[in-house]
Image 1 (tube, helix red, strand yellow):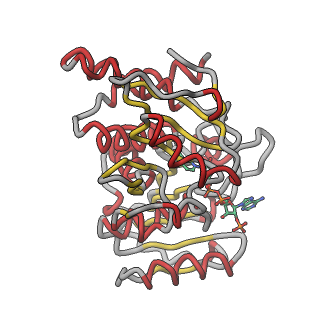
Image 2 (cartoon, rainbow, N blue to C red):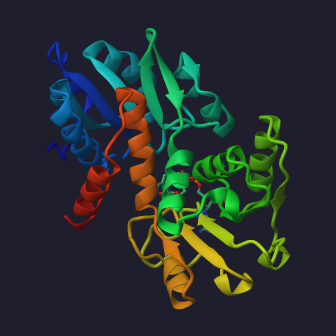
Length: 302
Ligand code: NDP
C-alpha cells in the first residue's frame, strides 16, 4: 500500500488500464487518505477485479502549480482527485463545472473528470453529517447546532446542516467579521433559515427542549497545547460535542466533554465519511466505510 508522497514530475503516463486517483496538497506528507481509499478499493476489487487497476496516491502540489497540475494529471490518466490545504478555494476558477452543494459551500475537496473537464464537489459536509449520525445516532437536523469557526470547514458544516433542514444554527468565531461574511455568503446562496451569530456564549439562543451539538471547526486543537475553543460549562441542557480535529485524537475540548460526560467524538469519522463519498462519486459504487474506518484507525496508530 503506497504511503509515500510524490511530486508531479515523478509521474509519467499511467499504464493504459490504470485509473489514477490522488490527494493534492501542500504540505501533504501527513495525509492518511491513500490508506483509506486503497483499503476500500481492495474491497471493491473483490467483486469487480477492474478496481485492482485503481490506485490512489498523494502528490505534493504547491499552490502556484495547481493550475498546471490539473490538466497534466488528466492527461496522465488521473480521473479523481481530492484537494486539501491550501487548494479548496483557489481551485474554483480552474473547474469546468461545479456541483450545487459545493457551489453553496464555496469550496471543493473532490474533483471528478467528467466530459473532458474537472467537476468540483464538496464531500466534507456529508462526511460530517454521516459521522454525527453514526456516533450520536441522530441526524444533524435533530440538534440546535453551534458551529465554532468560520473558515472553509465551518462553511461546509453550516451549509450541510442547512441543506439537511436544521432550524436552529449559530456560529461562534474569534473574528466576528469572518462569521458575518460566512453567514451572508450562505444567505446569498439561497438558504432561508436564520443563522445566528453569537458574540459570546452567554448569548447562545438555547432552546431547552432540543439537544445542542457543538461542532469545532476551528483549527484549535491541532497542537497538543492548544486551549479549548470554548468552555463547555457555558452551555445548558443536553450537549453533544463533535471536534473536526482527529490528530491528536483527544483535544482539550473533547477532554472537557469527557469530564462532563457529554457524548463526544473526534473528526476521524468525518475524514472517513468524506473519503467514502468521494470514492462513491468516482466509482459510482457503494463503498465500504468499515474498510476505510479500519484503515484510518490503523494509520493513526502507525
Ligand atoms: P481555516 O484556516 O479556513 O479556518 C480556521 C478557523 O479556526 C477560523 O475560524 C479561525 O478563526 C479559527 N482559529 C484559528 N486559530 C484560532 C485561535 N487561536 N483561536 C480561535 N480561533 C482560531 O481552516 P479550515 O476551516 O480548513 O479547518 C478547520 C479545522 O477543521 C482544522 O482543524 C482542520 O484540520 C479541520 N478539518 C477536519 C476535517 C475532517 O475530515 N475531520 C476536514 C476539514 C477540516 P478566525 O476566522 O478568527 O481566524
